[in-house]
Image 1 (tube, rainbow, N blue to C red):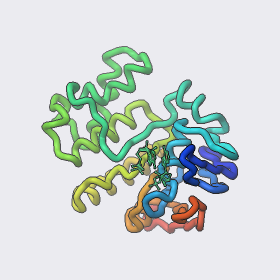
Image 2: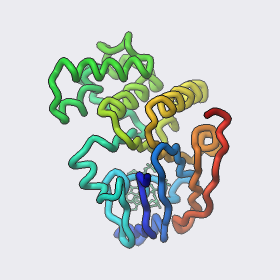
Image 3: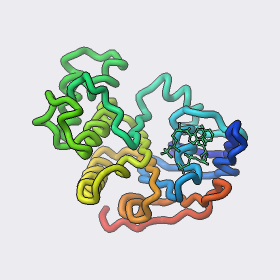
Length: 226
Ligand code: ADP
Ligand code: ADP
């Protein structure tokens, strides 16, 4: 089952920058894929296209066999976690996590239950009434992950989610993310410039070369757990 497909995708920004060049790659259901490469190699560009942000200059991207923009518009199948947690400061943790559920239009009681369930999953049950400024960076990222999971996506897109965290917090969150991935059987597309992170987390790594956004190799990682 193909979740994401890049069909010979090239992306040239109007500044003339070639961000991707003939990128050809596909992702199967249940994989934990990392896009690994140095800053500026086109990882975010590739990820944003999967999220329906930005058109390919050449070739095409498909998500569940469809145009990513349509999938984003019509379903909750794809969720995005950015490097900065992007929380609304005037909303509590619970209210932040309920936001995507509101857009889906389910009733308030079940929205609240669903939100509490995912907050429990990321270990924040005791902080649901806190405001983002009262939390550490690691906790804010947990809220952001909970918000993404709340709508039960099939595909989770993550753009350097742990880059701004200290090493200990990063390792803790990496372990938690792996647990969630194994339990929820999601497909995860993870962008990082950190080799260790890619090796630790992924089932497969797509290495992008610095110039001009080429896919330079694909590495299968033999995970030490089932
Ligand atoms: P990465 O995520 O690997 O750091 P990006 O996809 O962000 O790489 O960027 C790839 C290249 O495209 C870089 O040279 C970057 O400066 C350029 N780029 C990214 N976004 C834009 C944009 N909106 N307009 C012009 N150039 C861009
Ligand atoms: P990331 O940290 O995900 O690689 P960047 O810092 O490269 O992201 O880009 C942040 C934002 O700035 C994105 O919306 C990207 O499209 C835009 N951007 C990046 N590089 C350029 C550029 N050279 N010219 C214009 N916009 C850019």
